[in-house]
Image (cartoon, rainbow, N blue to C red; front, side, top):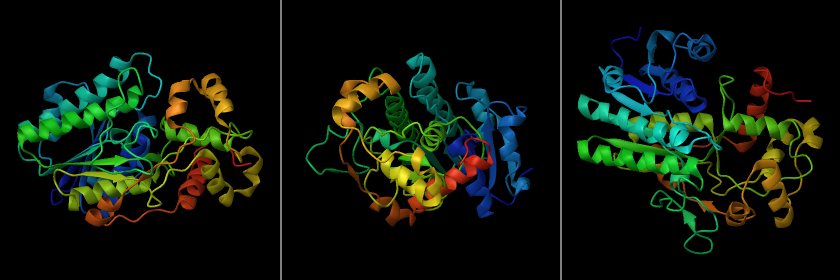
Length: 353
């Protein structure tokens, strides 16, 4: 059981790729007890990585799902000092957008934050949003060379176009609405494309992508899709710092300090530095637009419109606010990709040969 002398942090989605790293970061600080929500505490495959974390005396697990009743979430926030809401579905190709994405993301945020509002004693809440709530299409920028920051909102995504991103936009907007109505302190952390060593074999788009990269899916070349990468350990650290230093009412764009998106070829280069033997499996050239249209549609189901609006385009972002307010420093991309590959091999998720 958690020690009574430490403030308790509720972390939703504790068994997820990001959630597990967030729980570990709070426990590693030795300044907090953590109550982590999981769908099924009896599912040993899911909760074993949580039980393997250090400082187990400061960790308890709580059974809760995003669409559970108000009674469940009222119990989850009881005696809690801080809340970190990381739980949200990450499904890029949902069978049912409303059921698989929008309802869990938006109604789940409503459930958690409404419980906080009813509780009235939570001192600060941090919601994990996404850079997708800030930007959608790299082509659709106000001017050439535009630099995205926390002041921007994605207005292009919809239930039919980039529905995952749309779910993040709507969930974050709803969080701000509830915090304003109930007058409680809220910050949002908006990570880029989260990479870095996992703490478990949990299902994750990030881990699936990395396995594809390592195992040669893009060996003949890759679409020029540029992402602002951030290490999962830095994302976790940002949540702890947002609780400790975050200014209520602020959003924090959380992405590597290079301030520029990188493509699959560049990501592969970081892997190759750590594992030169993988060179033949990694991409070394970007496809031109005609090939991108063909490959994107046939191999990944990506529409020509999305390719036109995004691929082969530079974009820049500003992380000065999170660096200034929270004192964020960034893990090198060489370490992010090299250590991610190593950990995934250790977990049996890929082979580095």
